Image 1: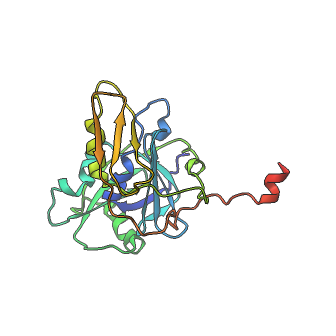
Image 2: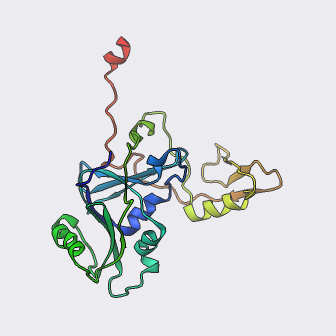
Length: 244
């Protein structure tokens, strides 16, 4: 529900990464923004989904009071993008929300390790016309609705989960897009010889007039696990499951 006391400071680029999966469907209006909430290990968790895709991004230095679904217009999103920054003296971009208003704040600070330490100063910029805030959104910043329990759709890790090959995300997107007919939505399937773990992977789509091949990257040695800050529901005890 709408929280009028909601306050937020997060990295602009990180917020835009979450925005990539925001829904444009009018009937499920509560998915038309990024859900921002405190992270138990510190910082802010930002989640967006359109029912088919979901992305969760954490700003470890973010500051938040309360939780809310944030919806920004195109002008604000453009202002938060560092590549389109028009004030070169303030290359760092932050989203600042207070009292239902949003501002794109620029700063020359190389790194902000904890936005809580500058929160009062930055929220004070809303009281006057300050050059640090170079874009405003005065209304419709927060969506009055209930965001779904997104953690319920995340599969729990278990011994049956195995890592697939690692691919360069940019190259994978380019090949998948080349197989798609813009006029007809299509799925893309990755096919691999299980005996050749590091061999080429074939991409097949519904369009039988095209296919693609992509080589996997070198094996990732990091353990297969979710980020430690992801607060997932604890599995039910074995005796409880048996009782059901």
